[in-house]
Image (cartoon, rainbow, N blue to C red; front, side, top):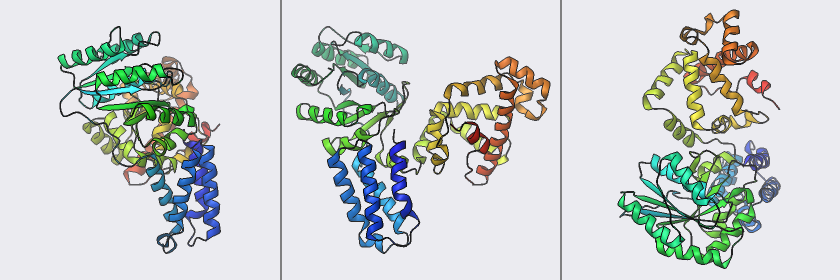
Length: 441
């Protein structure tokens, strides 16, 4: 979502980075470019005006002018102000001292509340919580069925009823009786804000007595999402925001504007369609991603989730030794797939994001890699050098591919082995030229 904005901000800041001295004209030119970039990203006009004014004020300050690297100082100022714009501090949820903790989800129809409820339940279960779901959206046809199907898929109970308020009360009591420590209530939405919606939501809120009220906003709607948030804030106070479809092609205005306009931070963000693709929102990490600085902390967390301590230790040992068989290749590949879309994972590595420009990674095509490796014998996976012409034809036939694709994979393994050796020596390699050329649009 932030690719275009990141490109434009980096283009604005690029001329400043290497300069030993800044003048008013250079700063003014950069501020104009930053202002245009944010406006084109659909950021609220008032927010843009205040943001640029704060950056300009700090950029012309004595600390920057006296710095040995004034350009880098301006980049840091932009990073700090972007972080502040999206909300500093902890984005985690608040949990009641006496369970269950009740989390109420509100929002318009189509924002993705029901799916967000299931995603949140799965995220909390990974944190060793025991969640339950309450289907209080009795307005939208099939909303209850949808939540029940999602609950069945992730093996989390779903409670409902014939009246939203009663369903909420009964659902919380049933969850408490089962020893559940978190209850997530999915409420009804409308195509637009109206009195009936707000009255029902207020009644459900009063019945639930929630610890957290989260507004679910569709990031694809840009400033319209911020207008919705303002309208909800006037009637139903909420503690934070869940942004859905953050992996889409929208320009990012909602994520950058909602905290400044409503005072409530983005707490969680949906970064994909799968139920395990809901993440806590960290403003400082998002600011780093926008400015092309990578996101090492999130990358580490994803790696820890995808592999055990033993697997990580074994991987490190293989990297240091420089040995990289197809068994290692397969293990690494599966770990990367668990971490999320490959291009998104690579973009978190500092310096790699810019190398991904123009590269199209087809996730469906990547599944062929596993098929090719699994068509090899155990000996071939351990000792790739034994794979001659006849073996390549057999592997291609067994995996439903052709010899050319097998040859490409063998070449890619050699490239990855080379990269692993460099990383084992403490170097950060670039993407292989063969990969860059092969996938260039």
